[in-house]
Amino acid sequence: MTDDRDELEGADADDLEGKVNVFAEEISTLLNAVFDDVPSILVERHQTKRVVRTESPVPLRGSNGAELGNLDISLWCQIDATKKYLAVFKSYVKLGSSVDRIPLIRWEYERDAHSKPCAHIQVHAHRGALSHLLSKTGHSTPHSMESLHLPVGGARFRPALEDLIEFLIRDCKLSAKPGWRDAVLEGRERWRRYQARTVVRDMAAEAADVLRGLGYTVLPPPDGDRPDSLKALQGW
Image 1 (cartoon, helix red, strand yellow):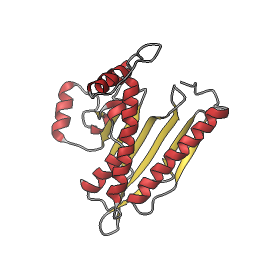
Image 2 (cartoon, helix red, strand yellow):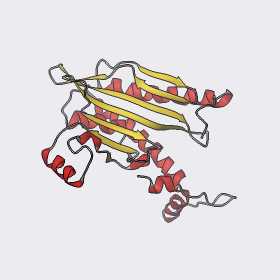
Image 3 (spheres, helix red, strand yellow):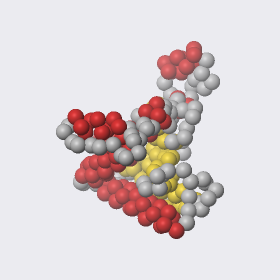
Image 4 (tube, helix red, strand yellow):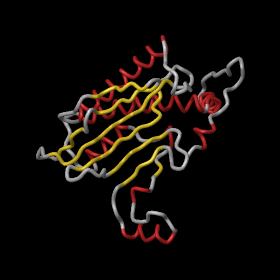
């Protein structure tokens, strides 16, 4: 991985800019196909990293057009260790309410997290029975449900932005443009194809075995099998 203190130069910098701009355009296209009054998608530059984020939270409306909440999105990107692929190493998606500034739900991903699941959900709510359970275990903040980090599949199997958007529309009954689901399906398929390729790179020998079982001819590279990524297999 490139050190944060170094600057990308030449082809590496051009490759990062190109990939990030495509990624930002994909996010903008998705949001504008689903919601009205979507703010601009910004790309902020921080040495070897880029942040793709909404300029302001996306307004979320009910069926009568009244704004009920908002969606704030930030995704930190960099070229991965192979210098071939764009990788999101941190992301925050926050569902907010129109009545106060405290988030309702936070979907977060921190690739290098140590004391919590790298991909998790935090819910800002209260449930007496849960507080009672936590108080009996000696939890330091038993009445703070948002202090719990609910795991959601790790780095490779975490939900896509499209999954969160469909949740807001289907479960929360927020308003969306006609044809919104086509955009969600297209984006979700693209995301899962990206993730499938990443999983194959993490567990190449396993993937090769599966392909051979399906009748494909797969030969190992000249320098031998690539070792599995234990971080991908075992990480919380």
